Amino acid sequence: MAKPTTIQKKSSSSSSKSILTPLQKTKSALKEIDRALHPHLRLLKRLRCKHNKGGDIYADYDDPRRMQQLAEAQTAVSLAIGTLNYIGNRLKGSDEGKKKGDPLRTELDRMRAMLVTLRKLQSSADAANAGENIKKTENEKSAEKSDVVNSTERSSENSESSPKGKREAGKLKLDIGAAKRMVNAALASDIVSNNGDKNSGNSSLSRIVSNPEKSKRRKTDSDGSTRKKRKSVRGC
Image 1: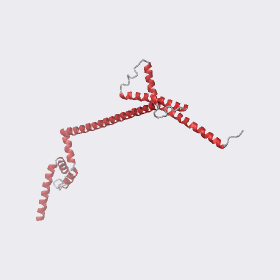
Image 2: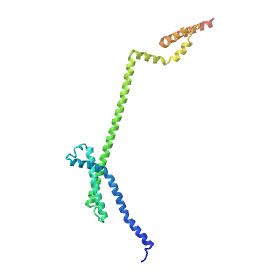
Image 3: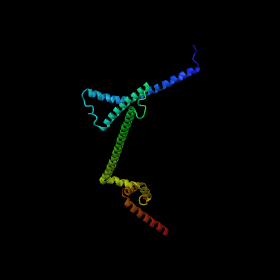
Image 4: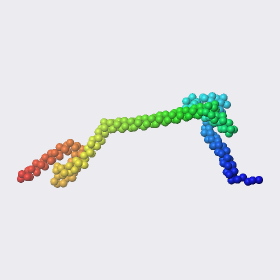
């Protein structure tokens, strides 16, 4: 008996690979269908149990979004069944569903188009809900900011209108030039006397800080008197 040559071995291995390739593709396609169908099958199973107990399966699906989920589940299962029929025909060697005008092919195309439409509607609904949530959050944040601003303005108005608020506002206004006034007060001749009386200087400082208008007049008078004294000294 003649042994098979190398060429015959290569041809047999290539033919076996060509046979196994579509089977492997079919196996991976079936796994993908099984994985995609799980959530839809769980939903339909719950509805089936409810129907067996005598309940209305559409009682909880008055919401359009939930009805859309139910329609998507039914369409996905129908498409999976049609695809399995198509795969079975191909494995048998039949061309049913292969040609474009074939009834099975037409039905599969319709179910695919319906499933795509349902998913687009679901995506647009999710996007609209997300946009509404974002807009609602932004409106709430802006409302909170306006409430904070209004409360701050009201508190500032109340504090300024009250006697204590007026005193605080007066202190804030006086504190703006406090350092400059203290320096001018320290250099003024009517505050630091010739005998170095510190108490009189401190009382003058407190009067200047508490009433800047009088301190300005005093400063003008003191400057004028100083200039007169200097002129008199020069005249002598």
